[in-house]
Image 1 (cartoon, rainbow, N blue to C red):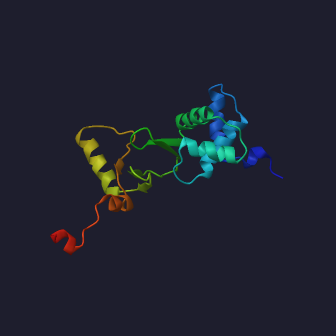
Image 2 (cartoon, rainbow, N blue to C red):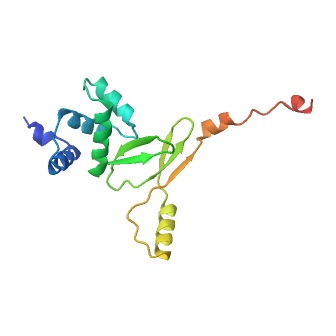
Image 3 (cartoon, rainbow, N blue to C red):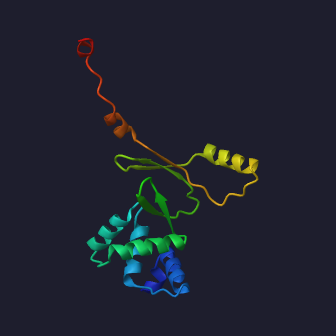
Length: 163
């Protein structure tokens, strides 16, 4: 039977090395939080992480969740995506998974997209300005189709418009 050590996900191992390298304790709460983030396949905010951990029986404070999400970001395992205002969501880093985001300001829906044309434009802009880019993030904030449709006033029937 394989030991816990041999079946631990690669990302958890990286996080544990990161913690130990900074002299931080490896706790059950940190392990559970790491596993929860990598069990998700989308965007999740700190409150959702906290609720998921509580639902799984882990007694972890919100402050612990926020601190450890920041450590996962610092370790390079998770991206923190600010979506206007004070809202931030987290997503685990995917190998070769560069993408950008559109976020609905009303319902919170997040759409990931990849555009080779945008990548080419950024490369051209950087070349024109002799700039060596490290990374870029594009976020488009607005209304999704459903929210935009519900925000428009309903058309009046022709008879009512003439009255």
